[in-house]
Image 1 (tube, one colour):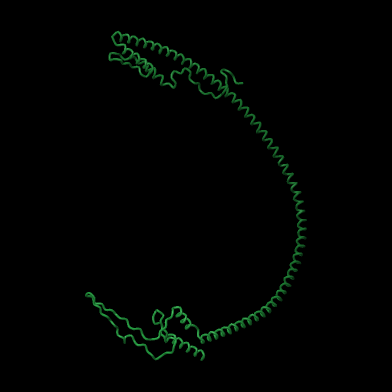
Image 2 (cartoon, rainbow, N blue to C red):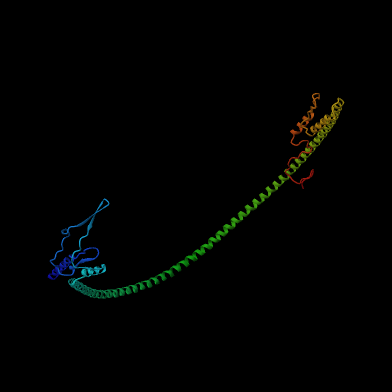
Length: 360
């Protein structure tokens, strides 16, 4: 502790000595007494030297010019910035006391590491001894456990073999019982099959008899149906013949009526032609021009082509023509087909039946 206190005092004095050094200005010009002994010579203060001024008057303007002071008469030296930095770094480096402190610290650290290594070796040796003792106990316990497991395996194997023999014996007994029961079931099955065959034979005979009876009844019904169908066919043929006769008679009557109507129409047409010729002759006799007569003839021909119009009015003196043809046209339009002398026959259900013949 006294050594450490002395070292701390020396360090503080060194720091105090270093703090007295300072730069004079940024141009690295330092005091000449930086590396020498401290002298009693004091630097004169700046305020003791008064400032000098020069007054200049030029063209009505007054200028005050300051004169710089003289440089101090002391020994100065000039150092470069790199040299200054080197000197400062060297001054700030470790001193002898610092180096001694570093050596002492390293010795203390090494001693501490040696003690720690010794403790680690001691702990390792103790753990190794404990592991050996534990391993020996575990190996002995493992051997005992293995011996016990082998004993248990032998017992289980013997029990399994005994159980297998018992199961095999039980299987033989069970197989014998099963065989006896199977033989008994086979006998019973044969008996049941014989009874089933007899019942099925009786049922088959009954079903066959019922089927034959049903077939016979179906044949009778089919014969009856055929007889009814033939009778119905004959009645239909008779109805067809009657309808054909009625249609033939109606057709003849219609033809007769059509022929009479045609004769009447022809007669009235001739009468109209004669009437038109007479009227045209009268028109010509009255001095009507030929052009007007041709116009009347053409109009009458157009009216004949259009039977819906039968009114002719060529002049105010002409009378209205008879209109019996309009009534005839109205009678024709009321029918489905005008003046069809052969109307269609009604539908017949039986095909390929000759007229007046019998079905064979």
